[in-house]
Amino acid sequence: MNTLKAGFSRVNITPSLGIPVVGYFQPRYASGVLDELEINALALATEKDKVLLMSADLCQIKKAEQDAACEAICAATGLTPDQIFIHSTHTHTGPSVSLEGVAGLVDGEAPSEEVALYSKQLCSKFADAAVMALADLKPAKMGWAVSKAPNIAFVRRFRMKDGKVRTNPGVGNPDILHPIGDVDERVNVLRFDREGAETIVLANFGDHPDVVGGDLISGDWPTLYRHRLEKCLDNVKTLFFNGAQGDVNHVNVNAKHGDLNDMFHDFDDVARGYGHARHMGNVVAGAVLQVYDKVNYVDVDSIRSKLYTVSIPSNMPKPEDMPLARKYNELHLAGRDDEIPFEAMELTTVVAEAGRMVLLENGPEAFDMKLTGVAIGSVALLGIPGEPFNGVGLGLKQAEGWDMVLPCCLTNGSQGYFPMQDAYTEGGYEARSSRFKAGVAERIIAEGTKLLDELR
Image 1 (spheres, rainbow, N blue to C red):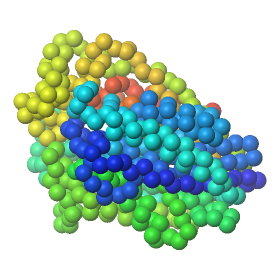
Image 2: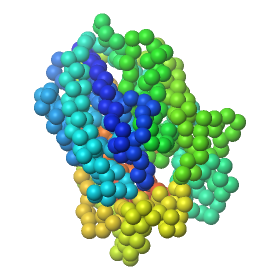
Image 3: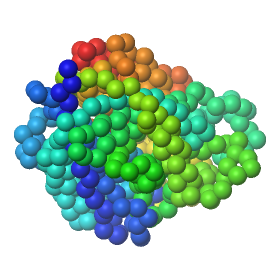
Image 4: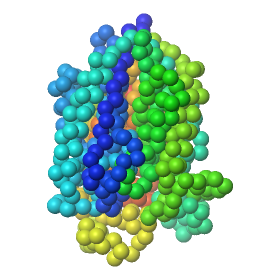
């Protein structure tokens, strides 16, 4: 028996100019706006249960701001924290939500008043979106489908001829031997047809929104996906949840013919461009369009949700590594990266690694991590509070007993990268900067699968 209801809301969260822009290890401040940023909210309910799925055009929301937003939503709606699923799409041209999120800046250097004001406003915006989505609940039926978005996501870790592993070694680099890992090009699609109201489409696909670059505010390709799909389909609203994207981005190192159209060579050897973000949005929208009319409709008579806390050992540094780490960290914070003997992505890697070592020199020995599970009938979403490698998504999608599992990164928190075990031995930006010890990805797969089993 189907008792599902669905509601939708959209709230503008575009910041004022001058706010710090996050996503790289260098200071940037918003000088203009390419795209309006939004919170898109989907409320779902049955006779006994409710859940709120919210997707925000932000790079990340860390613990303090996540807790504040959740508290504001609970106060405004009466929901409990386990019924709230707050996701950041991970745009690298979005505003800082907290001073902790301003890479490369120390206390006193950032315009803290602007960030504090924006963070406070954001809590109210989340609460507003929640209230409006719940007020919009209408009888609905849900359909699911799996499509494919080809040639826009690529592994970004490579084995080099000298035996080292590099992240983003550059387009056409002759020293590349081969990529490490596989890409999951599947696009998960949920369609909610409502009585007397717009249809709602939820899409899930894993890839870094690090395509636009610069200091103009933009939601990157997830925003452009939404714009394209809603232009193609009448009376449809859509929201996007990014998948397991920690080791995947848009860079095709074997680019040829028109692959580099509308792109420029950026500071870290990465090809970027707004035109390419538009192309990626079009491809994901095209994937949704391929299956939109052919979804598998299923009855939904229950919604289950649960928060699951696990303790993960931290990646504390060795004492002998600290002198060099302190040196690099001090040079970086002083704006003297040119004195660090690395360039492009290798510079970013050693800077991030040094920051991690300084941060964890005296512990803690472990971090708590909250996984969030939501079951909508025979379909499940698994929220992970950081950036899991693609292997994590592949592992979770194998959980038994579900028509479809949607792994979602940066959900209900942001705790950094979750690399696969081999990456810690091989090296590269993600493992060297991760706050968690080797084994974190495999632990997420195991604990996430256990959580999904409990929701069945």
